[in-house]
Image (cartoon, rainbow, N blue to C red; front, side, top):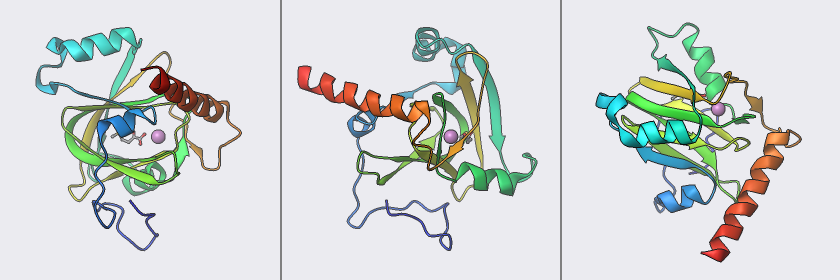
Length: 181
Ligand code: KMT
Ligand code: NI
């Protein structure tokens, strides 16, 4: 997708012209992980149970974004949509509603990832990204974390953060794995 100027509506789909769908392999290539989960029967979902255990996600809480339920809604949305990174993974399981996670690809171009009910997404530490609701103005997501949660965003530029270097190293590891397999 192209960069969105401040005058345009961040809640739109945004496609390149011509349209350029992004495959899960392309997401893997930038360290983004994705699974489909049965959120109607979460505790019985073997994928969810396995991921949580393997990746040591021992913290979780629910995050609901809607104009009527989230205090300081407009400002929070603005902050979510400012390009940033975190020291840790951003792990979200969409329980209801929808939205977009935008992540930067290797050429620093935006990829818009639509998330819907049942989508579980892990953004690696140090990846530049942002989040917006879509036209439906509603999402409910489970936030997971390993250890005591820290949600602090570091706004771009944050290239001197250790997590950024960690991420660039991860990209190199992904490249190496590609040459082996
Ligand atoms: C974030 O960090 O951008 C959020 O928590 C957004 C809501 S979760 C879909
Ligand atoms: Ni974030």
